[in-house]
Length: 541
Image (cartoon, one colour):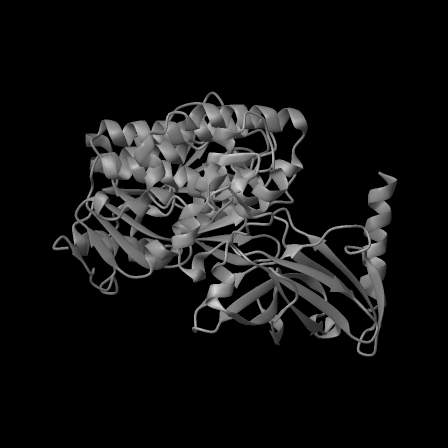
């Protein structure tokens, strides 16, 4: 592809002051100072930091004023009316920018050192209107980090036009990007005003629709702090109300219309695919957590939106999990098969039995929903199939045992000849792995294979652990998996286990929101007492 090239290394002479960082905040006094300092700490490349306070009442504006009194590059802009969202304050900040380039920063996040230099150097080298870099989601307080849309940022690249990489529509964030200010102004690119959730979706679509020259850099340029235990969840994390889903659907629909209206047909099609692959799976995993009224309204609203899709929207990758979930929603007038949809929405996907067929042998979703055909699964590579493994962990004093059962999937598993399962546990706290073991699979029925693996609970120690599996086949291929937790009070009961190393362990297998087996371990008398006290406090509330 002649217009796609590697971008030069961004290292070099220190850039001149050219960048404005717009920091927005509302009642976030605890964090906004850190955000502003992280922007100022980028060095002389930052010409100005514009802090927009959206009518805070917690002292945020006064804190910003004190910082501005000591730092001439910081300007504080106070909005007269609270906007209720993020778009209006970003527009206010954008209007105040005087620098050639601009980027955005939320009050509860930070820019890592060197972020602005990396983005600005790439913009100059590539003559790009937009430069995008790697964002990492940092879970707090654990500090565990997860890269956002990492495949886009595996290497330096320059795109003469966005359609060269349709996956750009998956990175809907506005904050991990540097924009040429006059590019945004020439094209009238702004955020939706007022209380508009997922304003990033619309802004990013407007940017892509304008067809900018884009540079991609693998550097970490933004740290997105995720505080799930906060009293007030961020707008994007607060998904328990149906209004959140409706707002997300509206933003996705607007993004599609913007791209299609600009003649970006390939990007528009990719945006509809992204809705199936990302939004559908995320919210389907959580349907079991919602009440009946939410489920019915979610189901009806989703069906209404999916009716806008045309045949071409379904043709690409028809066996992908999100597309199968969407087809079930389209064909069933009322919510159904929610546990099975939850497992299919997991990452990696798991398609649980039963595996129904029509009278002529064609694979289908179920006997009473044969309209949803599963024939495309037969042509998928073995390493991408939504294979299902059941798991049951039995904590014991001598040797805890993990029992695993692999299910057939329309003959594909037997055809590939399953050999062994590699088992390991991954810590939620620091992402390290432990307890690695390998077990051979043996036929345990007409359509299943089984294995048993000892688990050293003392070796795992304190923390929450996710089970990760690698299924190896005779032909050398493999599939990364998680396991479906077999439920029931006896199977997922908390147990006290004697331990030579710790004296005592408290172990509780449990099912995650997506139905996967995970394990909580409290080691030693103090750990056990801490868990029991927490349990008692919850019971007394």
